[in-house]
Image 1 (cartoon, rainbow, N blue to C red):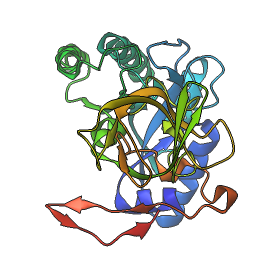
Image 2: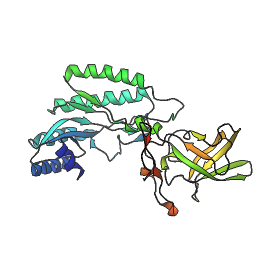
Image 3: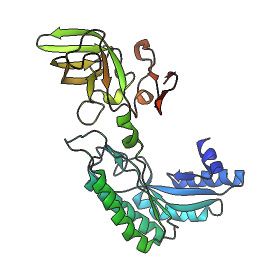
Image 4: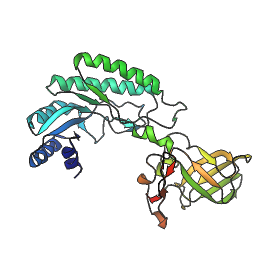
Length: 301
């Protein structure tokens, strides 16, 4: 259904296998509308700046670099119903290194040149995404350095591939820090020398903010009810009876009390939509969108 919609809208289909190229060609012929296509390639090199890998040795995603020639040939043979326009490589996510991403981009350009030499028209080089949001090693992504490096690389590529465009998929990097998860303190427990703050949401509404599922330090937490309270070191946990439901261990925030409203930052991407909804009968979270200072009605995520 999704591929059909992309073809009908005139968008680019990203093909991950030779078999998928044939399927796209058959669907395009049925619709009597040629499909624009990119080859998703899986490079042989693993770049560890991407903390979560979706490309490299052992990855199931994309066409293996060793099979690039076969894939280009299959795409060319699928004409006129499939029109090849370039390549796509998504190597991973959680990358906060501009140098690491530029190394990735240079390697993708290498693959694009190879595909072009095989006969693939390369109008688009999609570099994928994976731009990190949280400072996993204490540093944030230097987007200015990344932009300068990509512009320089693009100028070099244009000499061999005139008119080629670079495409980035920075979705999470754009929206993650704009979202906030509001949590109500249910109770405060003291166990030996530790203070546990139990809130009314956890991994059931934001899995990737919990210990063991996120990359980097805990998400920022604010006490909206008593921001001027003295700081206290606490461990923030959700209501589920499992250690997985830990949002932050030993963080300092204004002393929380029962009923306080806490704000957990960086919740604008992969929050409720990627979480085990309904665990232990928990009610689903609700989403409110602020648009031009107007609030849309809450909706269940």
